[in-house]
Length: 226
Image (cartoon, rainbow, N blue to C red; front, top):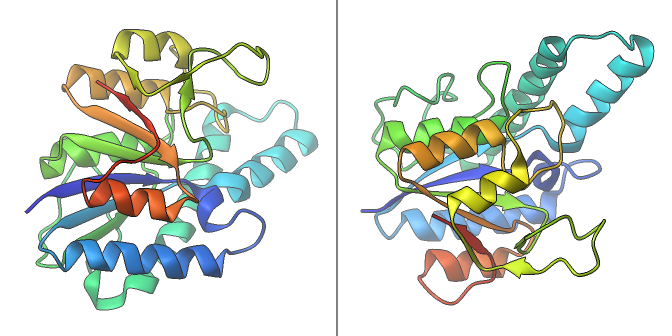
């Protein structure tokens, strides 16, 4: 049995309203995987829903604290997690994983979690869950196909990186978590993953055929950091 941890971006769940088509296809791929004896831990992000709440808070109160913005984000991740848990029904653990660093006792093959504490994103929850459940690989289902050596929006000569070492990846994402930030993976989570000897796979989450290929051990498009 293999345990896989996925950081499921909230913008996949609800890019602009809820994406029923994505959720239906995603459900099928995950069920196919667990029926082969595997286990999946899904940590849900807040995505655009989170950013919209944070945006309005900053407009109304420009002095709003980062901690308050983080709590808003955590609330949206929990809402998304309840939805994701619901679509898997009895295949998923009876309750949402409230503390990703503490594994819950369940015979079910899917565990769904959300954001945990201020100061980081749900990516950190995915790394904590990987350590707690004994997984070495974290998959970040993002909105990019590859990680680039620099920001492709600013630098036309930016090159996609199929493989990276943690040292170079950490230079890209920086040191500090900023609520609602657009980075390939949370800097706080990245440092923990490096410390614990994990590998990170970043891939475009909306390309579910590609995710299926990865889970089947076939050729896939994405970046691996180790």
